[in-house]
Image 1 (cartoon, rainbow, N blue to C red):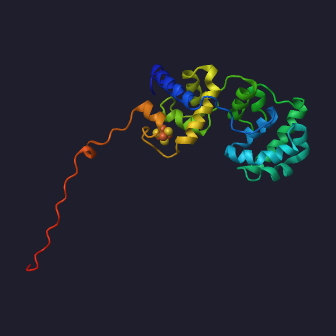
Image 2 (spheres, rainbow, N blue to C red):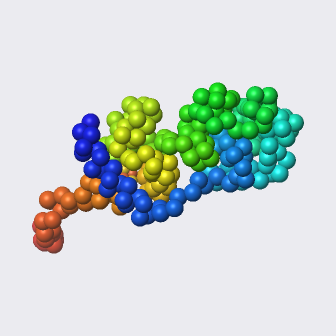
Length: 235
Ligand code: SF4
Protein backbone atom coordinates (compact mmCIF):
# COMPACT_ATOMS: atom_id res chain seq x y z
CA UNK A 1 0.00 0.00 0.00
CA UNK A 2 1.33 3.45 -0.97
CA UNK A 3 1.75 6.14 1.69
CA UNK A 4 -1.15 8.50 2.35
CA UNK A 5 0.79 11.38 0.75
CA UNK A 6 1.46 9.37 -2.41
CA UNK A 7 -2.18 8.29 -2.62
CA UNK A 8 -3.26 11.92 -2.19
CA UNK A 9 -0.92 12.96 -5.01
CA UNK A 10 -2.44 10.33 -7.28
CA UNK A 11 -5.95 11.36 -6.23
CA UNK A 12 -5.21 14.97 -7.25
CA UNK A 13 -4.15 13.88 -10.73
CA UNK A 14 -7.20 11.64 -11.02
CA UNK A 15 -9.59 14.33 -9.82
CA UNK A 16 -8.34 17.00 -12.17
CA UNK A 17 -8.38 14.64 -15.18
CA UNK A 18 -11.89 13.40 -14.39
CA UNK A 19 -13.22 16.92 -13.74
CA UNK A 20 -11.96 17.93 -17.11
CA UNK A 21 -13.45 14.89 -18.85
CA UNK A 22 -16.80 14.80 -17.01
CA UNK A 23 -17.41 18.37 -15.76
CA UNK A 24 -21.03 17.95 -14.67
CA UNK A 25 -21.80 14.31 -13.97
CA UNK A 26 -25.48 13.48 -13.42
CA UNK A 27 -26.89 10.20 -12.13
CA UNK A 28 -27.89 8.26 -15.25
CA UNK A 29 -31.14 6.85 -13.79
CA UNK A 30 -34.44 8.44 -14.89
CA UNK A 31 -36.66 9.52 -11.98
CA UNK A 32 -39.13 12.21 -11.02
CA UNK A 33 -38.90 12.30 -7.21
CA UNK A 34 -36.95 10.91 -4.25
CA UNK A 35 -39.02 7.72 -4.18
CA UNK A 36 -38.68 6.88 -7.89
CA UNK A 37 -34.92 7.55 -7.57
CA UNK A 38 -34.68 5.12 -4.64
CA UNK A 39 -36.59 2.49 -6.66
CA UNK A 40 -34.40 3.02 -9.75
CA UNK A 41 -31.18 2.72 -7.72
CA UNK A 42 -32.46 -0.43 -5.99
CA UNK A 43 -33.33 -1.91 -9.42
CA UNK A 44 -29.87 -1.14 -10.79
CA UNK A 45 -28.16 -3.82 -8.66
CA UNK A 46 -26.90 -6.53 -11.07
CA UNK A 47 -28.58 -4.63 -13.95
CA UNK A 48 -27.36 -1.91 -16.28
CA UNK A 49 -28.71 1.63 -15.88
CA UNK A 50 -29.88 1.47 -19.51
CA UNK A 51 -32.00 -1.59 -18.71
CA UNK A 52 -33.45 0.11 -15.62
CA UNK A 53 -34.36 3.18 -17.70
CA UNK A 54 -36.16 0.88 -20.14
CA UNK A 55 -38.38 -0.73 -17.50
CA UNK A 56 -39.13 2.17 -15.13
CA UNK A 57 -41.38 4.30 -17.42
CA UNK A 58 -44.15 1.68 -17.43
CA UNK A 59 -43.61 0.87 -13.73
CA UNK A 60 -43.70 4.53 -12.67
CA UNK A 61 -46.70 5.21 -14.91
CA UNK A 62 -48.61 2.84 -12.62
CA UNK A 63 -46.77 3.56 -9.36
CA UNK A 64 -44.64 6.60 -8.62
CA UNK A 65 -45.46 6.69 -4.89
CA UNK A 66 -45.12 4.09 -2.12
CA UNK A 67 -48.92 3.96 -1.77
CA UNK A 68 -49.42 3.11 -5.43
CA UNK A 69 -46.50 0.62 -5.34
CA UNK A 70 -47.96 -1.22 -2.36
CA UNK A 71 -51.33 -1.39 -4.14
CA UNK A 72 -49.66 -2.65 -7.32
CA UNK A 73 -48.20 -5.67 -5.49
CA UNK A 74 -45.22 -7.89 -6.23
CA UNK A 75 -46.76 -9.88 -9.11
CA UNK A 76 -47.65 -6.77 -11.11
CA UNK A 77 -44.31 -5.11 -10.25
CA UNK A 78 -42.57 -8.23 -11.58
CA UNK A 79 -44.50 -7.91 -14.83
CA UNK A 80 -42.85 -4.48 -15.39
CA UNK A 81 -39.32 -5.32 -14.24
CA UNK A 82 -39.00 -8.94 -15.42
CA UNK A 83 -36.06 -8.21 -17.73
CA UNK A 84 -33.91 -6.93 -14.83
CA UNK A 85 -31.50 -9.23 -12.98
CA UNK A 86 -32.95 -10.79 -9.80
CA UNK A 87 -36.40 -9.52 -10.82
CA UNK A 88 -38.55 -11.79 -8.59
CA UNK A 89 -36.60 -10.81 -5.45
CA UNK A 90 -36.60 -7.14 -6.42
CA UNK A 91 -40.38 -7.18 -7.02
CA UNK A 92 -41.03 -8.65 -3.56
CA UNK A 93 -38.60 -6.17 -1.98
CA UNK A 94 -40.26 -3.20 -3.70
CA UNK A 95 -43.66 -4.22 -2.35
CA UNK A 96 -42.25 -4.70 1.18
CA UNK A 97 -40.30 -1.45 0.99
CA UNK A 98 -43.43 0.49 -0.07
CA UNK A 99 -45.38 -1.01 2.85
CA UNK A 100 -42.69 0.06 5.36
CA UNK A 101 -42.43 3.56 3.86
CA UNK A 102 -46.21 3.93 4.17
CA UNK A 103 -46.41 2.57 7.70
CA UNK A 104 -43.30 4.14 9.27
CA UNK A 105 -42.40 7.16 7.18
CA UNK A 106 -45.77 8.57 5.95
CA UNK A 107 -44.85 7.59 2.40
CA UNK A 108 -41.61 9.61 2.43
CA UNK A 109 -38.05 8.44 1.73
CA UNK A 110 -36.14 8.60 5.06
CA UNK A 111 -33.00 10.73 5.16
CA UNK A 112 -30.61 8.67 7.30
CA UNK A 113 -28.27 5.83 6.36
CA UNK A 114 -29.66 3.71 9.17
CA UNK A 115 -33.29 4.03 8.07
CA UNK A 116 -32.49 3.54 4.39
CA UNK A 117 -30.30 0.48 4.99
CA UNK A 118 -33.08 -1.12 7.06
CA UNK A 119 -35.37 -1.16 3.98
CA UNK A 120 -35.66 -4.43 2.00
CA UNK A 121 -33.29 -4.47 -0.98
CA UNK A 122 -31.39 -1.36 0.11
CA UNK A 123 -27.71 -1.87 0.91
CA UNK A 124 -25.01 0.63 1.81
CA UNK A 125 -24.24 1.53 -1.82
CA UNK A 126 -27.87 2.30 -2.65
CA UNK A 127 -28.22 4.28 0.58
CA UNK A 128 -25.03 6.23 -0.26
CA UNK A 129 -26.34 7.14 -3.72
CA UNK A 130 -29.69 8.32 -2.30
CA UNK A 131 -28.14 10.22 0.61
CA UNK A 132 -25.72 12.08 -1.66
CA UNK A 133 -27.96 12.73 -4.68
CA UNK A 134 -31.26 13.44 -2.92
CA UNK A 135 -30.24 14.76 0.50
CA UNK A 136 -26.83 16.28 -0.33
CA UNK A 137 -25.13 14.33 2.44
CA UNK A 138 -21.49 13.56 1.57
CA UNK A 139 -21.15 9.90 0.57
CA UNK A 140 -18.84 7.88 -1.67
CA UNK A 141 -20.81 5.08 -3.36
CA UNK A 142 -18.49 2.20 -4.28
CA UNK A 143 -19.79 0.12 -7.18
CA UNK A 144 -17.87 -2.46 -9.18
CA UNK A 145 -16.10 0.20 -11.35
CA UNK A 146 -15.06 2.30 -8.36
CA UNK A 147 -13.87 -0.80 -6.50
CA UNK A 148 -11.78 -2.06 -9.44
CA UNK A 149 -10.27 1.28 -10.36
CA UNK A 150 -9.43 2.25 -6.76
CA UNK A 151 -7.34 -0.93 -6.61
CA UNK A 152 -5.76 -0.49 -10.04
CA UNK A 153 -4.94 3.15 -9.27
CA UNK A 154 -3.35 1.96 -6.00
CA UNK A 155 -5.67 4.09 -3.87
CA UNK A 156 -6.99 1.06 -1.97
CA UNK A 157 -5.94 -2.54 -1.47
CA UNK A 158 -9.14 -4.04 -2.88
CA UNK A 159 -9.65 -6.22 0.21
CA UNK A 160 -13.23 -5.08 0.78
CA UNK A 161 -15.77 -2.47 -0.31
CA UNK A 162 -15.66 -0.94 3.19
CA UNK A 163 -11.86 -0.53 3.06
CA UNK A 164 -12.08 0.98 -0.42
CA UNK A 165 -14.71 3.50 0.68
CA UNK A 166 -12.63 4.53 3.72
CA UNK A 167 -9.43 4.94 1.66
CA UNK A 168 -11.18 6.96 -1.08
CA UNK A 169 -12.74 9.27 1.50
CA UNK A 170 -9.23 9.91 2.88
CA UNK A 171 -7.80 11.17 -0.39
CA UNK A 172 -10.61 13.04 -2.18
CA UNK A 173 -12.18 16.27 -0.84
CA UNK A 174 -15.48 15.64 0.95
CA UNK A 175 -17.44 18.11 -1.18
CA UNK A 176 -16.40 16.12 -4.29
CA UNK A 177 -17.05 12.56 -3.00
CA UNK A 178 -20.33 11.99 -4.75
CA UNK A 179 -19.29 13.60 -8.06
CA UNK A 180 -15.94 11.78 -7.97
CA UNK A 181 -17.71 8.46 -7.50
CA UNK A 182 -19.95 9.19 -10.52
CA UNK A 183 -16.98 10.32 -12.62
CA UNK A 184 -15.02 7.16 -11.79
CA UNK A 185 -18.07 5.09 -12.81
CA UNK A 186 -18.27 6.96 -16.14
CA UNK A 187 -14.53 6.50 -16.73
CA UNK A 188 -14.75 2.82 -15.79
CA UNK A 189 -17.63 2.24 -18.22
CA UNK A 190 -15.83 4.05 -21.00
CA UNK A 191 -12.35 2.60 -20.62
CA UNK A 192 -11.78 -0.03 -17.95
CA UNK A 193 -12.43 -3.68 -18.64
CA UNK A 194 -12.68 -6.31 -15.92
CA UNK A 195 -9.83 -8.24 -17.53
CA UNK A 196 -6.32 -7.69 -16.22
CA UNK A 197 -4.22 -4.91 -17.71
CA UNK A 198 -0.80 -3.34 -17.25
CA UNK A 199 -2.28 -0.03 -16.04
CA UNK A 200 -0.72 1.89 -18.95
CA UNK A 201 -3.26 1.51 -21.71
CA UNK A 202 -6.09 4.00 -21.14
CA UNK A 203 -5.71 7.80 -21.03
CA UNK A 204 -5.95 8.59 -17.31
CA UNK A 205 -3.86 5.55 -16.39
CA UNK A 206 -1.20 6.67 -18.85
CA UNK A 207 -1.13 10.07 -17.15
CA UNK A 208 -0.88 8.38 -13.76
CA UNK A 209 1.65 5.66 -14.54
CA UNK A 210 3.44 6.88 -17.65
CA UNK A 211 3.26 5.40 -21.10
CA UNK A 212 4.51 1.88 -21.58
CA UNK A 213 8.00 1.85 -23.03
CA UNK A 214 8.34 -0.38 -26.05
CA UNK A 215 10.47 -3.40 -25.14
CA UNK A 216 14.15 -2.92 -25.91
CA UNK A 217 14.14 -5.80 -28.38
CA UNK A 218 11.32 -4.27 -30.40
CA UNK A 219 13.43 -1.11 -30.96
CA UNK A 220 16.22 -3.07 -32.66
CA UNK A 221 16.21 -2.99 -36.47
CA UNK A 222 14.70 -6.11 -37.87
CA UNK A 223 17.19 -8.70 -38.99
CA UNK A 224 17.16 -9.00 -42.74
CA UNK A 225 16.08 -12.44 -43.75
CA UNK A 226 18.24 -13.98 -46.43
CA UNK A 227 16.43 -15.42 -49.42
CA UNK A 228 16.57 -19.15 -49.14
CA UNK A 229 19.06 -20.80 -51.44
CA UNK A 230 17.25 -23.06 -53.78
CA UNK A 231 18.85 -26.48 -54.02
CA UNK A 232 20.61 -26.89 -57.29
CA UNK A 233 18.84 -29.25 -59.64
CA UNK A 234 21.99 -31.38 -59.83
CA UNK A 235 21.78 -32.25 -56.09
S1 SF4 B 1 -5.30 1.04 -18.23
FE1 SF4 B 1 -7.45 0.88 -18.84
S2 SF4 B 1 -8.04 -1.24 -18.34
FE2 SF4 B 1 -6.17 -0.73 -17.19
S3 SF4 B 1 -6.80 0.06 -15.20
FE3 SF4 B 1 -6.57 1.78 -16.55
S4 SF4 B 1 -8.60 2.11 -17.40
FE4 SF4 B 1 -8.57 0.07 -16.58
